[in-house]
Image (cartoon, rainbow, N blue to C red):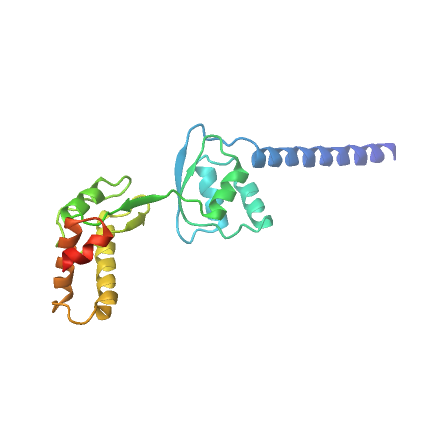
Length: 214
């Protein structure tokens, strides 16, 4: 009987020690410094679930335990994680990585095209953009690329951005052409665009544009 009692006591102590050790490991993995020793980028693919993201982070050395990450994400209501490119700081904590991906705090990559740039100049800007792939060798016709800011992701094809610029310009012209004032000396949207380009080259001051166009 004494042997049975001692066995039960020791067994319970072992369970408590194991549970305590597991809790300590989980807490340390969740709140302690991560394995990365330098800043790194990681790309989460669209449609990837919590389990896949956790395994990816563990395999790439960003976190110490995929299981703890999955449990924390589901218990914290962060099971809907955002795809995209994320920059992880050195020794970034697991809890901070989860918060970053849940928030969708992705790397902000942009190309800003100022007004008045020729298509050749725009192509050079796109070709020099960091972390994109492909090279634009053909220059689109002037006036077919809309000047504005374009966001992109790592490894995006440069040709895709050029097509986005062309689509944006076509959409803008389609929306603005029917709302033009009566009596203007234009028969086509292309003629209006040509004059707009000339005016833009002449001045960057909005108050002067009407007089120059006249």
